[in-house]
Image 1 (cartoon, rainbow, N blue to C red):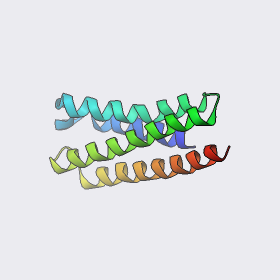
Image 2 (cartoon, rainbow, N blue to C red; image 1 turned 45 degrees about the vertical axis):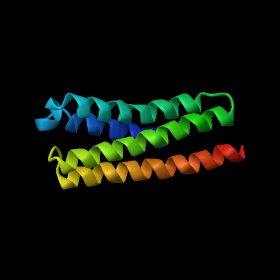
Image 3 (cartoon, helix red, strand yellow; image 1 turned 120 degrees about the vertical axis):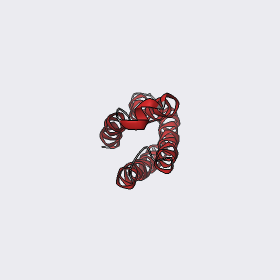
Image 4 (cartoon, rainbow, N blue to C red; image 1 turned 30 degrees about the vertical axis):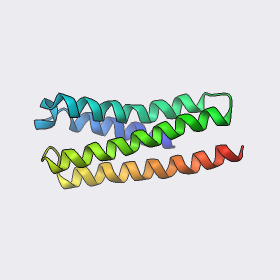
Length: 111
């Protein structure tokens, strides 16, 4: 479920960074893309690890990447690359993903 939601967010970010001023700001565009792709990638990698301890490490990396995406989206909003509605959609996705990851981490820590 969290992998699917994070993949959806990645696709959404890729689409919005292909247009307007965002598409021309290679630094911010590439950074937010790397961060958002890192979320489902680290979830998938963690899921394939043999131990819960290893899995949790990757889930924390995914959580950190979610925070990066939210920060970069806030910057994009403040400089006028995205509208408030778009920012709110990204914010909602990042908060949902972070919450889902927290629950997954707790469950895996209990073994």
